[in-house]
Length: 299
Image (cartoon, rainbow, N blue to C red; front, side, top):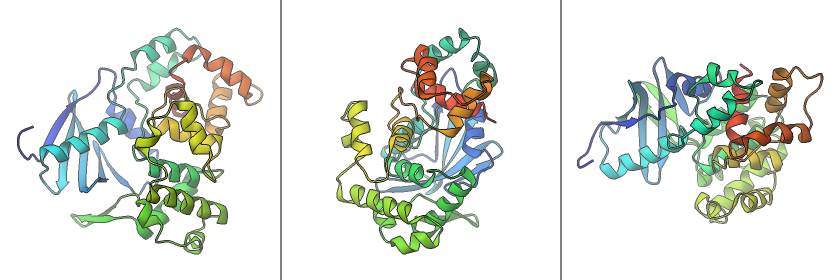
């Protein structure tokens, strides 16, 4: 790219289904940080000092990225957007080895046929991912998205375009403008309010960052995350899976994962941790992808 452009195209991976990825991003939940369209999605991004509203759609075998506001971006700005989208849709991973393993598994081969092209949709911003996993602890997704909307509308950045308002998840400093009492007034529990403020302080002070965490091996990442108040095993593994893209992460104890396994194998009870470990053994290095496809099977 040599000049400012209003749109660009990214080649899609060979194994890629934009509709499957959009299905996951929608699922009929009220996510205030994005707006789904019949053939695409609009999202307000804040990347370093860049604030931009983008639209993603599919054009044959390419992802079409369009800048809506501002209407043109410099080459450097587009590089920030491209990096975000590649991580969000996990575009740079070859998932054919995962498919080969599934296709040789009589119990799980149907996952390839039914959900071909689904990518492990991530949450590139580590702070957002940690906050979201804390918000979702021990409550259903509908209520979790309701709490997220209240938080985002209270302190996140917003942008207006063609009569609609678009929101970005708050930064640590923005979230710190809210008191524990304010968060509780949104129906956050006292403990979750305290955890969110603590995580915001750690990120704001630089005590934790994605760049620093990425220098560690997965075991050290897990240890660092679980040292944070309010971050237990499930929250840490979910974050490693969705933001740090650690391929071996399994959110043990996840209700959806347990129900999916129970349903597929028609078990009388939910599987034990040991049963899951045995079942996941053929998928060494692809555990996170298997979790994601098992979640998809619940629909």
